[in-house]
Image (cartoon, rainbow, N blue to C red; front, side, top):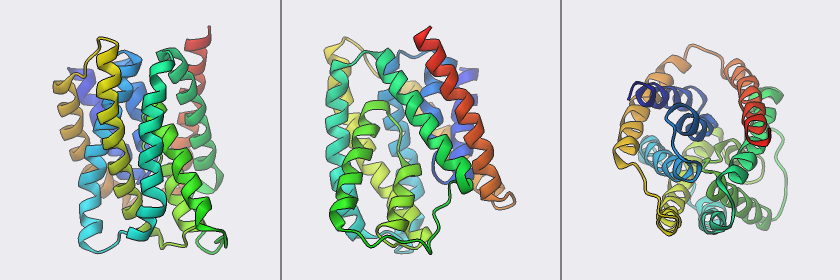
Length: 251
């Protein structure tokens, strides 16, 4: 139980500090610190990320900092992709999913290290809305396959492609993550049942509650630490974690 509480607190604090990318810690914490089977950890990660994102989204929605047009163009394809990715997971081994997860983790690390993972609002791209739809679908599939919210991909897309203000992009991203992670979690319940596995509901509840508390703590601390420095440091940490996961599942 100690490791579960510590892991949940670290996930929540990282989410509060970084705004995006912190949820990528959930699966490795559940697998390597708590000892959950890979597929169960991915399912539980989706449930935890959905709950924390929904709570985090509420203040943005109250301030009307959620762009519903982007939710339609990015969120709905993302939900479809997440459901499809979760269904596809039935045909992959847990080890294969962890290998894919490690690659995604290293990709996220690269984005965070480069310019601190921040999207430059001055560099917007005049592209078709179908690009946003396609990216939403791809990010959704990744979410369904490996259990990450994908905020590190969603926020830059909403700023650079949809042209949203950063705060609105964060609020919109949280809503999208909550919606597609919830749908992915629902589908994973069927996937786990077919393999005679089940979610540890007590553990999921602990991670969710402690994670939400940690996110508020991280949010307060994050006001005093430069985001660029935080994300670069976290990016290097993710590289180490990604290489470790690759090595432990290949060797």
